[in-house]
Image 1: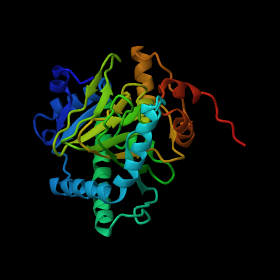
Image 2: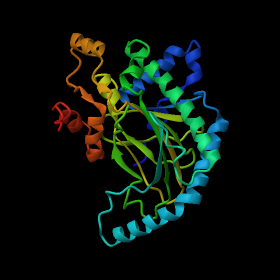
Image 3: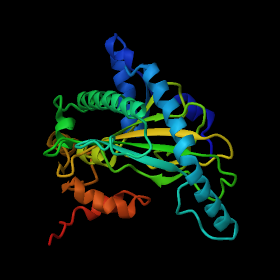
Length: 323
């Protein structure tokens, strides 16, 4: 379902240059409201050069055409044949992807089929995205009344955060009724920064009341930001991760370059004590969030990614058995 026009008009967009002006308060309020009520917002004028973003887009689309398209067409043929014969193909995603790890150890030099220029551009882009993610985390700290650096420290394991980029193509699908580009889910980690195609839409989030899917409007040179499950826990539910999905389309090949700034594997995740105290004083929190090691959560998440997050949180209240 496409978003109503009113949803498109009100979708939270932050022009980051306003954070350096007398309009800072209003911009911070947009971020606060987005984190509490949308789980998503878009950034413009975020400091990453348009020339770099254009080169990432050009190289990513060329990479798909050169190295991935043929293999995807074979998958598409098999999926369509199965679906048209009556098989349920709703448990597959109509996407072509590869994953670039940046931290704690990069794999960009080991990925097959990438030329040296693309590797260098991806390293440069990842560096800019990581800096932007950490700036955003401090803006969230400011809105939450937490000390600067709290969220970055909370996500850092013994070797710092886990940081990587999922590079995806969502090619045209002649039968959008048979499969989604990516099934509905919340993201497991911390904060996610997405550079998406500005010509081909498809990303949708579930509204706060759970009654409608809302389009995330493509904007030229924007970065889409969304909250992951771990930030929901650390903020004691003040900020929410939300279900989102990618629809298939009969035309257009949608590009998605999504970077995940996640906790380190051994990071211990728990609600910020200051926010717990505030919730107790205000009697505003009805949910008790668990304390757990991020790697344990991920082991559960990979089995239940396309399900509601609440049972995952509940399961983490039970200590993980170790051999």
